[in-house]
Image (cartoon, rainbow, N blue to C red; front, side):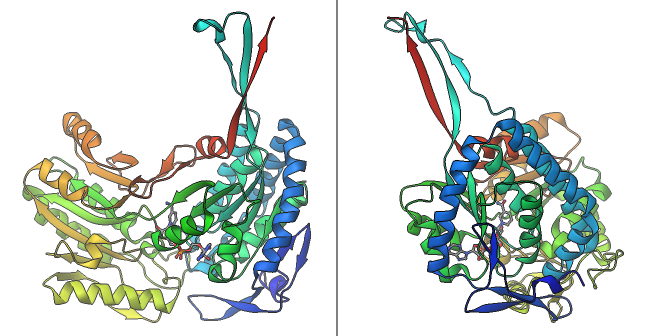
Length: 480
Ligand code: NAD
């Protein structure tokens, strides 16, 4: 079995060697409940050694030529592509993501690493026109991008491979070293990725990996004076606590969303409903750009609601390893219980349950709600589970105002055949990306990706992340 290699719990990568710790924790398959193995729980003493090692690794990376950084990342991408089935199976067994989605994630991660390899040789500065202002005559020069040093990369469970690649790829392209802390629930894929990168020729101290609980060693890592930047993807609550612990250093915060979709009366209702069902329930809704709120214009409301319920009930729910499965389990029974509690709260306050609403262990049936009070948890907070709420509207601006009523936004979407409507919505929707005739659940790994509104700090998407993981340095020659 692919996971047996981790049973020893030697999952801490420090100074190029794999180590165990005094404490260990199991990794559980959310579908079967089976323990896939155990990983070491790092503590503050491991952080000290990891950061010291990564500091040496940062020196090695800084002096590595851009061509060599690019070669390592290309060869990691090729190795991942060659081993795609094993990685996909690992994603599915540790997160419960259906295997078709896990295969897509691996393919995307290969692309993320390739984009990083290309960025390594493109991350160049520019000539500066010093003589453009009096006092600059007789000067010539340019700026370059230099690495920031040691980056603490902290990732969530839901895309355990591609989100790690979105931090490691740009960090290495820009010549940094990384201490990676994968999610408690899904550390095994990160361990496989670290092995693959070392085998591809990454300098051995350029990457440390610390498994275990964020609450045990997160503050020691993010607050460490020799960590130059914290790149975090996860929930708002943890993000806030990281910002407090980190103090003054560079921060990238990729937080949650509450994806709104607007369906206009000129839209193709069947296409919009199919896209919304897929965007709401893929990965059991555990998706930061998943569809959570759908605003439908009066004239097509009934038709859209009917089509969405049919598309939802058609989804195959069950064993995530079965290629026919569309919706698998949530990551744990606690997450499933919280999801059902939020659905029950909404229904108790008058929402109509149109589909789903039941739980069996970690499995929550895809749930469609209507008449949801605006301040119910499923509508006003990130749900991060398989539930979607329908709202009826008459006037587009009213729908846009409702869609914008959230603190944390990533993508928003609009279905319409009218260019004028699409452009108006794109201008007025407060989001970091507006998808026209797609649901919120669309991302190309090369595009800028991040948040809008409160807590938005930084952009991923390889080219953008690589710049955030660099600092500019000006070099000016005076012909005196
Ligand atoms: P989480 O916030 O619970 O955990 C994220 C990571 O933070 C984990 O590795 C966890 O171990 C670590 N952590 C916990 N406490 C810490 C501490 N004190 N110091 C340092 N690290 C600590 O998130 P999750 O449940 O794994 O993932 C779901 C969340 O991630 C959702 O809110 C989702 O929207 C968000 N997300 C955002 C994006 C994006 O790109 N914007 C992508 C995927 C997921």
